[in-house]
Image (cartoon, rainbow, N blue to C red; front, side):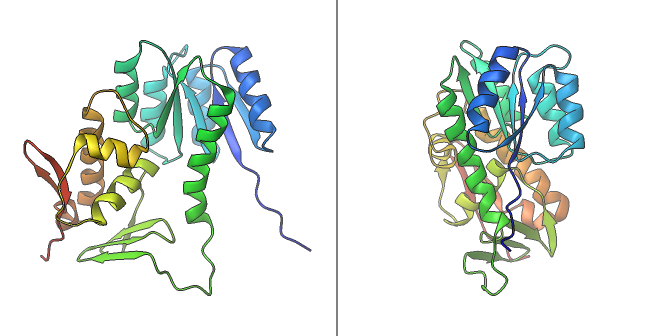
Length: 241
């Protein structure tokens, strides 16, 4: 008897019922299981009490807005989050990235685009979900104090696993694959976010800051590996001790 795969569980958060219904209809065609929330407080409660594979989170919500909801989720979980924003809210989108959003989609949007973005995030998660027991990990970067096991999508610092959001993980992996190479912010936005992002470059600075803080909490030496090259950008530098 074949083992059945666990269904993908998605939380759709929007105060407009018609948008929730539209997204639910398209996502259910992919056989995803959909939960809904119509305000920020309900969204936060559901996000913290359930384990979702992806959260679609509207920016403007009654109760708590999307920024606050995302911020509070990030204090406890690394669930991938896609922010839904209206045109003209660019500064809010930047805020969303700063508090840990993994992607954003501008309204009015194509439901097909939403499905494609969700699938992209799920593909990244699938890399961590399936690692054959018989297979020795081949895609592993080992540095003093820091190991990145890309087969298992796992980062360990001095033997302690560090929990990163998808974007934090991708940023670290990208930098670590090219030690000592300096990347400017535009390059990092293009390579790590995988599409042109026309917005505030503070997005990169904020992710770097969050990444450093998490590494530093486990090891001061690991935190020093993410180096700021003033006036240029950032690089990964392996430190000995």
